[in-house]
Length: 70
Image (cartoon, rainbow, N blue to C red):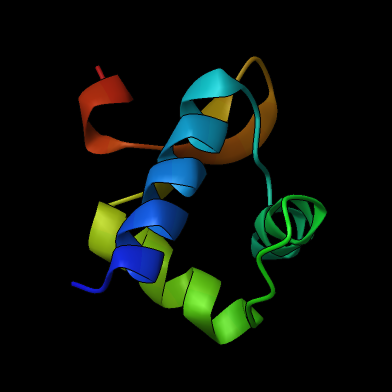
């Protein structure tokens, strides 16, 4: 894994753990705010590699990591 991919995936995992990330577009926008320009396809691959899945929490769909799913 490249350093940039590892850093990006770490940031994505932190976003997911910090709150509700509801879409790949939202992840892409939040990464752009931090100076990381990526495509939606890259975000999609990152989410898959992290094992992120969409779950319904309090009536809202958002991403969760495997260790967050009860």
